[in-house]
Amino acid sequence: MKPLLGTPLKRFLRDYKRANPPRHELVALLQSVEYPANVGSVFRVADGVGVDELILTGITPTPPHPAIDKVGRFKSLRVNWRYEQDPVVAIRGLKADGYQIVAVELAEGAVPYHQHHYAPKTCLVVGHEDHGVTKATLAACDTAVFLPMYGKGRSLNVHVALSIVLYHIRHS
Image 1: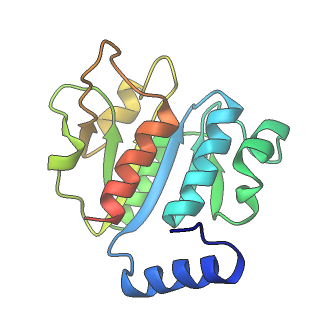
Image 2 (image 1 turned 30 degrees about the vertical axis):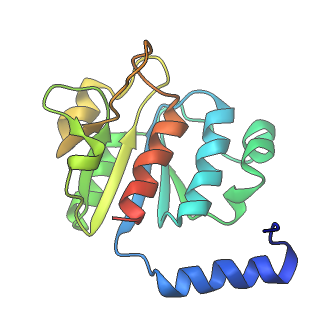
């Protein structure tokens, strides 16, 4: 076995996408994710998983930004994104468009991410690295999912948690 490069790699990925078309419209909302490196990582993941829109809210830094651009490999130029100051306003608009709003958060009533049935139009909400999703934003969400932790840590980095759930939805 050898790695794919150049044209064979492009064909491999193209053929996979054709054989496995997306079944969900996916939006990701970052509620005051503070660190530019995390935002850059989310842009890279959003491109990889084919997120339809990325919404940056609150104190989340926006492109152009040196750290976002470097870590995200300039995926902010390819991913459809917008900034909305108030996450609850963004959530209201998404709900009006038929999206189910799912917080990725350790919250009362949250279910393991792999046991939740995701709607055809789903928005995942992640919060600040230290404080998580605010009470006001969480109250605007329809439900919450969490990633079970088996070690001593209680959570994963925000971009890692979002990545796991996005890829799970994309392939469910």
